[in-house]
Length: 261
Image 1 (cartoon, one colour):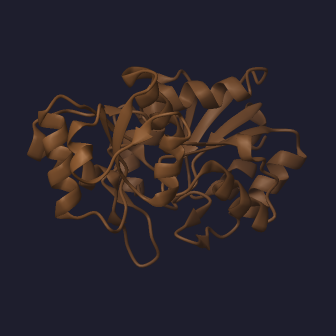
Image 2 (cartoon, rainbow, N blue to C red; image 1 turned 45 degrees about the horizontal axis):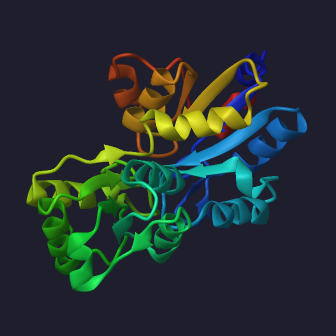
């Protein structure tokens, strides 16, 4: 019996599982099409918040994978909603992140501040992006010292990329936390917020597994959410790390194709 036959649905990470940067993981698209054609329920969940959920869904469709916009849950969307709930209606935010992430936060109703005005923001919301600089760090530090609440999309230290991992949101967030003395509330994996949203989309699926490449976020988050956990070795984690994990993932496979064997 194939591993996939043990489950009715899956929460599946993207970076390091379906693709690495813009390069597809070999066999991933074919495996996902087979799962969907077999009636499996799938929600894609990612801590990458550079783009909005619909853009990730479009990238999946370009790869020949059926994916509607509402079947992609990003840590960016989960964190934006969390920040809006905590700050309240009419709240303000200073956002460190890519333009797509800023749009996601603004869509919750939070008013985005910049420049000197951002030092009085009610929230500082952080996601990694390539243009992060000292000016952003300084503004965030002033806002947090003045009483703003701090939110981060994840603590993932790196992001799988062709040629080697790049610094991730966790690296950016560590700088903000160090400078301000504040500790962020996390909206993405492994915290419950993203998992609750994703699991709610496939509430009728009885047996659900979390499939991801990172032990500290994907596997730990799935475990906390009460899901079976499947680690793939195509991204951030090695087999040695998988075998040394405590607790162990429920299953470890080379890549998504391993779900079908």
